[in-house]
Length: 341
Ligand SMILES: NC(=O)c1ccc[n+]([C@@H]2O[C@H](COP(=O)([O-])OP(=O)(O)OC[C@H]3O[C@@H](n4cnc5c(N)ncnc54)[C@H](OP(=O)(O)O)[C@@H]3O)[C@@H](O)[C@H]2O)c1
Image (tube, rainbow, N blue to C red; front, side):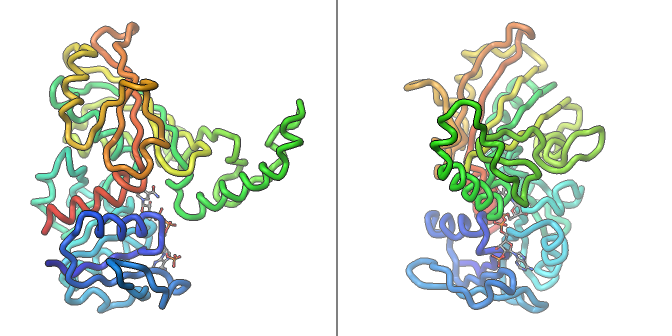
């Protein structure tokens, strides 16, 4: 049995964590939940009872074996080391430690052995797009050596937390109120005002810049895909380029990836490799392709539209979708907690 702390229990990822701890019957002896002062005293349902939100303070983690961190990067950077100093191991879902060479970055199905060495007492989970994509491509990489990957993402608004969900929902409500206008030619949804999370309207739109602009014009989300994929696969030579796009979907990220390998990989071989891969479900029957809606609420990463690339013999095109709150965050954190304990 374990004594567990959960920082950010009222957020999208934190709420999913509580569900998954219950679903997987994680052996929790004691659960302490933390959120901001806004939520102090709030009661959250857990295993037929309730847990009460506390604020973060020194000494809050004394006696805990494990602390899962589901808050933004500055808070994680501040409080994860406090939890370690007070005796807990930390599983962090933020980006605060992902590129730290003394903190392993782990996808449970891909590099579970990396949790065995925790110089700082912390293990990081990758960002949600990298997590979903790497779970799907790792079996192909292991078999044939991924050399280059060109990715475009279609990221849901829940990737930006509760505020992203609220912004899309508010804008959809306004759009619904104008449905008569929208049916008339010439009236576009652009008349809905932008909100606070994104500088442009997200409802009925596609924003080709997820994250904030960094080096060489690529965004923070795009650089995460490059650097985190290499770290998880233990191969800095893989050439990766990405375009990260925000789409008006509530839950479930999708990505299209073009893959080149050290040796040719046929579609038949890829199907065979993926059919038996842990945490992966190949969707090639029915309507023939997986969507974010189908991936939302389930554990596996869905893979489809596997094609041999005629412009690059031996390469593949693939479509991947997964629940950004489950495999993209909370499920992986619980899987890592299981490995640690
Ligand atoms: N959303 C995703 O798809 C996803 C995927 C992978 C990783 N992540 C990462 O997971 C983390 C959480 O993301 P999220 O989407 O769950 O965000 P969120 O929905 O915005 O939730 C944020 C959480 O932080 C808490 N918080 C805010 N200020 C606090 C403070 N001063 N002290 C203690 N707690 C505080 C909030 O509590 P209140 O409710 O009291 O404000 C809430 O529980 C982030 O680092 C994010 O990058 C998210």
